[in-house]
Length: 457
Ligand code: URP
Ligand code: ZN
Ligand code: ZN
Image 1 (cartoon, rainbow, N blue to C red):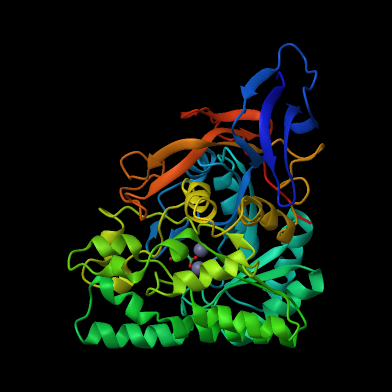
Image 2 (tube, rainbow, N blue to C red):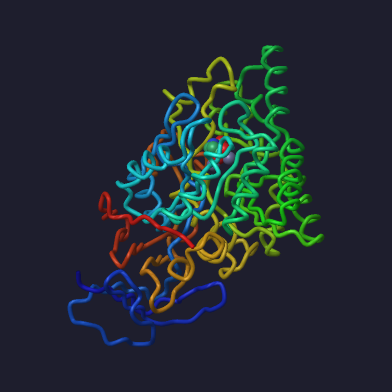
């Protein structure tokens, strides 16, 4: 395959900003410098006037996830293709065994599904129950597959959620492996109790979903997850943190010397709970857990992001079609499949509403979207870096472009976009994945199965 040279772009990393060419060959960045001499057959990307940064990494996606009686609507091919169109070149998805299912059996199922991905992919292993067998299998997937992070759900009690005793077992086992535990923090039993009360009162519409999962239910679980990690002397990573109560718990723990990593998502930064104020079923598109929060929490998250207290902005991409999937909960909001799409829009939203508004710098943007997830999850410097020897996963972003997000034009395989009508400043002009131009000025040139599995350290 001929090489690719990206000419004259402004390279942005978490620390640097400079103009240079980048030459890519055999999947890797081979040279960086001014006016590079390259083979005559190299494909040229003219990046003058554009920004060039490492491919985005989304450490929280759910492609073709069997969940709540259905399966999320993007498979590993369509979901990673949408990601590439939006500048995301690697994902870390979740293997989620059913309660009492072998982790190895679930691993084989997910590995098989993911073989069709067109971007690179790794896995967190969710641990949905605990015992001797699980402990042994955690060690096995760590050793055999380079799975170095384990996910737990404190929500979804009775399905994939774990209790505190099980969570302690996961934290201790992961700790003995030097692996990281990540946690979905909501008090599962409290949610169930609130759900039961609302449904008994006939409050079945989507707008009651957020009332069954208030911020304090998340804040309590965040504090508890940190406490349990602290008992074992282990760090912890909080997924999709949404609210002030949780951020306060993190801040307190950090002041006391606990290592806590925090992830949030664009929907929690950019939407407020007025999205649920509708008497029709449209609010179902926003049914996700945790839910979109009341006004005020968004500012807390932006402030935390701008002062470096949030390490990663992921998507929790987990799309369900309104017409035949969300509708499963038409008469009972607790049966609406939880989740929404976002992988194609993440970088553009963070550029537009973070960088262009001055809330975060370009360097912070690259850090939280591209570099920190590589560092935290053991992919750096192969991923998340513009340096010689790194994988040639590169985004060229044209700051002069503009667009409007719509379900009519997005590449997610769903009929709604929770950011419908959001104006976007700039846009991805080219995405290189492993040295191949996989997206060029609106033209998606992805190859089914071209994505590589990413064992991690
Ligand atoms: O509503 C959500 N977030 N669905 C995906 C599963 C999860 O909890 O992350
Ligand atoms: Zn979750
Ligand atoms: Zn999730």
